[in-house]
Image 1: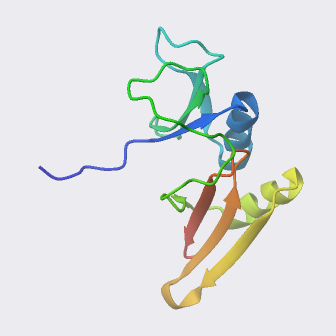
Image 2: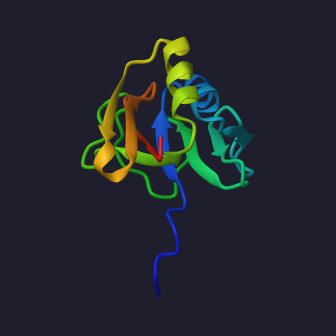
Image 3: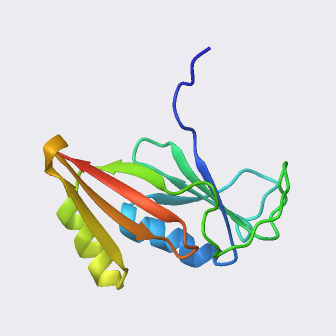
Length: 133
């Protein structure tokens, strides 16, 4: 059996509303409630335009099926970054500028790729990939 695709990334945060707003404002992800019995003040799911849940954002006090120690705001441990593919380089840089976000651009013209590296409000490093930009 082959892996079909990455399903989602889970971020545990003590800044739930701010984190959801960041992903909505920067990446146009749609914020929705998670499934019952989880409460909206404990979980926000962020969907892409195709209706796929890309991110699960959970508050620190949200019940978890597999619990382990998490320190919100610390670096992402062994996972260096979460990479997402986009098509709108200029628009994303304008949004990051408008929000006052720090970011770094990496231009790999040899493969037709521009990258933006930025951190979300929880210090999760994002790699945004723009092929043909």
